[in-house]
Length: 110
Ligand SMILES: [Zn+2]
Image (cartoon, rainbow, N blue to C red; front, side):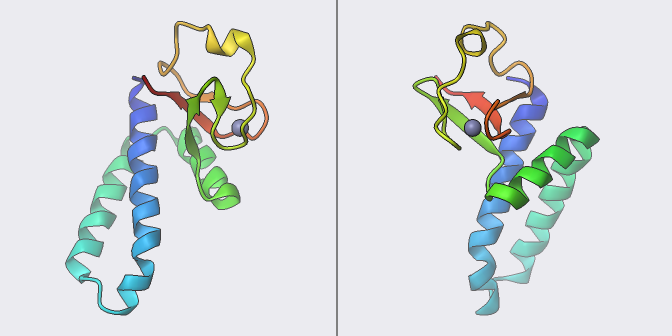
């Protein structure tokens, strides 16, 4: 799998986890964990190409998620069935591919 794509998936997991933890923060979610997560996030972001991170940020703000799997040839963000030429590519997961409808970043699972 493309390294940038893997980084994006990890970043999104972290961001969603952080969002879920926000309520707990108020009731005393350990400062230590927050610090560790921030460090992990910064490390991921430092390895991402600028334009890819900007795309990610835009998508997260707009939809709440940015990277979605393709299941049964459909984008799991907007459920558009992807054009055949996209699905039949042998380069799946080897580059950053976005959904032609919603623009989310796509990845294929086995
Ligand atoms: Zn889509």
